[in-house]
Image (tube, rainbow, N blue to C red):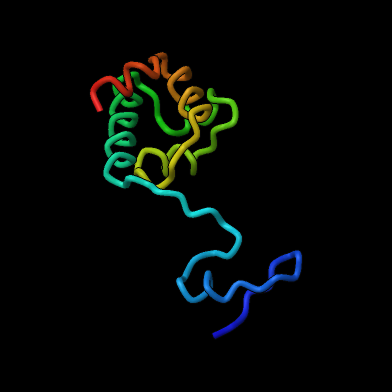
Length: 100
């Protein structure tokens, strides 16, 4: 087993043993919810006539990779990111969360 040395010099064997990145917070994530949220966002984006490239060009602070990962349920986006996403395609956050 290799030791992981953090920037401050401390070592974290337990994180290495568990296959996690040392120093990272591993909060609870409901993968089914994130997948459902992403699917709903993708449907709304397509219904409004937006491609990922158009979203990228019109949404300040969102990149193609982030948009794709949100829609596939791979990341837990911050509420500000979701707000930017929904404002770009012209829907409200309420509409997104109402039928989840």
